[in-house]
Every structure is written in C-alpha cells, then in structure tokens.
Image (cartoon, rainbow, N blue to C red; front, side, top):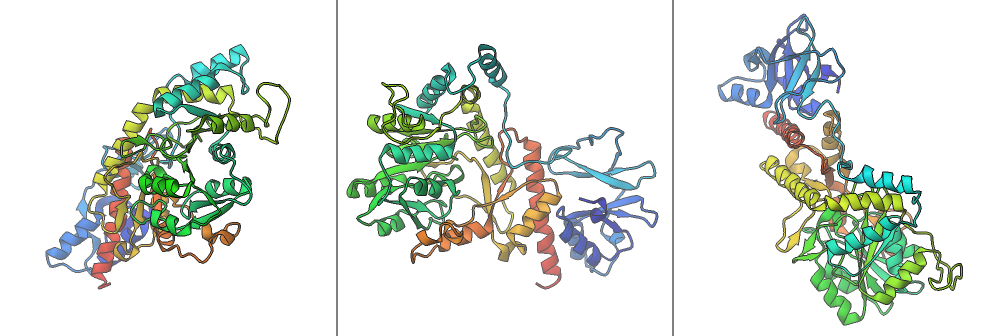
Length: 487
C-alpha cells in the first residue's frame, strides 16, 4: 500500500481523516505537518473519544490525534524491522522524520493463504530416492506412504494416486460406477468433485448444502435419490466434516455407495471417526497447500478389497497384476512417484503436530475476531471435529457496511492474501445441466459472502494477531463512518 494512503495533515478535519481511515484498510492514519514530518497518530478510537468529549467532525486532526507517536528509522537493508506483535503498525521515517513506509507484525513478508512446511525429513528422504535412482512410481516409499497413511486413518486398503482428483476417479472406478448411474454431489465444492463423476461416465446430481455445516444437506440428498442413483459424494469442505450418519443411513436403505471427498479434511473426525473412512471409500489430496503435502498427490481408502484391487489395476493402465503388459480393460496412469511419496512420509511423521497447530490457529482467529460485527467463522458443531484446512469467515455486509470483496481488497492492500469460497457448481457453464429444477439458496449465500484467511501451518501467532487486528480496524472504521454519517 502506498504510504500516502495512511497520511493525513494535522490541519485536516476529522471528517476528512475518518474517510481516509475508512478507505485504507488499516483503520488508522499518521498525521504530518505542512513539511510532511510525522507529528501524531490517529485511529478510529481517537475520533470516537473526541466525539464523546463533545467534539465534532469539523475539528482538526490535532484535536484527536495522539501526538509524538512512535516511529522507527528507515532501515538500510530491504527488510523492515518487526515491531511488537498484536497488530501494531509503525511508520518508518527518514532522517527528516517523514513517513516513507510502515512496519507491521505481519511484515516484511506478504502473508500467503497457505504454504507448505518442509522442516522434517523431506530432504533426507528425497535425497535417498535420487542417490538410489528410485524416482518413478517404483520404489519403497510408495508402499511405505500407503502403510503410514493407513495406520494414521485406521484403514485397511489405501491406494495412492497422482493427485486428489485421480483418487476420486479411482474410487468411482473401483465400485464400477459409470454410464447410466447418478452420483449426488454438493453445490459448494471444488470442481474436481463433479468433474470425476463426469469422467467416469456417470451423471452428477447437484444438491444444496446445509447453512450451518456448509456441507451437503442430507434431507436434500434424500429428495434427489432416483432409481438410477448409485452413489453419494459428500465433501468435508475446508476441513469441516459432513453429517455422515444420515447419509450412511440413506445409503443402506437404497443400496448406495458413499464416497467421501476428504481432499481438505485429513485429520478431521466425525463423532470420533476419521473423515474419509466412514463411507465405502474416501479420498485425500496432498497438493502443496494441504495439511499433508507431496507436492501433487492423492490417495483413496476403500472398504472393499475387490474394489481396492480394481482401483490399483486402473491406476496402472488397467494392467493385469499377474500378467505384466496384459490389459483386460482401459486404465489410466494415476501413479504416485517415489519422490512424492518420500515427501509424504516425512510429512506424515509430522502430522500430529501439524493438526494441533491447525486447530490452535483456528482458536486464535476465533478469539481475535470475537466481537467483530458482521464476521462469523464456521460453526463449531457437536461431534464435528474440524481439521481447519482453511479458516474461513462469512461476511454479513449489512452489519459490516462493506461487501466481502471490498474487505478482501483492503486485506490485500495490508499485505494479507485471501481467497473467496468456491463458486456454486450450478452457476458454471459445464455443470448447469446437472442442477435440474432444484434451488440452491444456501450455497449462493455462502459463496457470495465467504472467504478464507491465511491458514498455513507455518503461520505465526503474531501474524494471526496482525490479521485479526487489521480486520477489526477495517470493520471498526466503517462502523464509525456510518454512525457519524447517520447511515
């Protein structure tokens, strides 16, 4: 953000200064004299205090600012000094005490939504692959990774794959789901969920989600079942478990297969059971932004041994395992490499710590955003143990006074990356034909109002505090502006 967006003249009116606070995303400004030298600091609370003392918005900035605000000298190196944690923003000044930049608890780096943490045995294991020349899908780490994942999940049949999308496709193939079959999917999910159904030759049937859990609504699933329905594909969105018990009851009643898309939910639990192991199959993604990463990669866990055997066969071009280079059906190359599996093994060794940190991050956000009017995190439901792949919030624009996209823009200007919730499937051209005449009010609302905050395992507490303080200032400045304008 240009420093000029954080500056006001000490002779400006409080009305003009308030407009600057509202625009800049920090909810504060630095007051300068006619020569541009720093003379004070002004935030929304200062203006409120002035008004409470009987002042008015026509007064000058001098009437409300904190004089002689702290500053730091502009460093000679490219890295700005880090002020104390807690969201503090400190001006960096030149030799003449003119503000030229800022330092914050969240800087000098821009805070990404997610990034991998590779601080364990990743390099050691990958080096072993390279020095022994086992870098393709043939190698001991592939089997070791499958065994470690199975042990973590308490699952028997684990088939690794080149990515999470391939894992979903293998799950469908393993149970023979294809042409003439219908698969019920939620409207609020990443496109891979519905794409794999189409790739398998089946017909997706889109239904709305539940507003509280953000996941597929079991009552709407029940209403969408037809004689052609073969499977239900719940998604544990952003790490929040779907309500599995009623879905499993529907599957038993109608003879259906349940394939859990747990791409974002490794470590999440539903009533004590690991997500991805409750249905007939569950799939995981190990993309670089996931809790556990192999760079690219995925896995499917299957309850049935025969389905698992078919998934393994289809993963390797449909080749007969007992007769090399003999193919009884057309398969795919969905194999995970030994290099990727080596990274995955090192990551799984750290899984417990990663998941503990994820939940601590969410708890710190929940505490830091408490009282932020118009912002709400995902509900904490009894028996739903969220793994918090992403910490996401819903914006009530009527209460914040700002729409979701403007809040995201202001966070971006403050050096904080965000990402919107997924678009409704039924809105996108390839998937409109699968919406039928059904309505999707919950997905439409959540998609338009929700966004995800930085959530990576390596996120520091000071960075979380900075993000929360920035959000509070953005919302707080707008509230003050609306009150003083009579809005």
